[in-house]
Image (cartoon, rainbow, N blue to C red; front, side, top):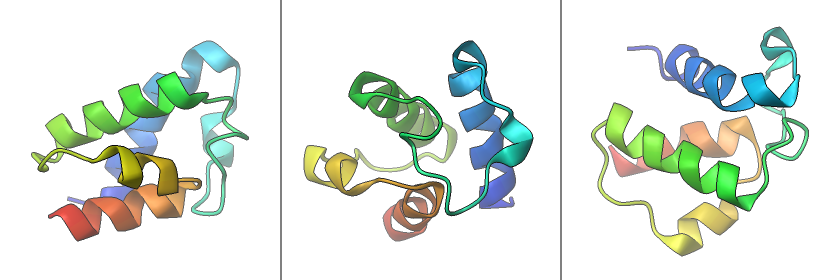
Length: 79
């Protein structure tokens, strides 16, 4: 499974209510640019845990995630 493709799909679901063009999402895109606040980010990470069957993401790990690449790196680390 291509992590970026699945991650972009999850981000698209999360940001569709934020009026962000998901085609513009790159690894360097910050979650702030996507319009995600801390609650949105927490919801996204919970969806990622479930989608990728990951162990629980800690609060410290959540706070370190700033960009799409950070999310991808976290997924790879937790696998």
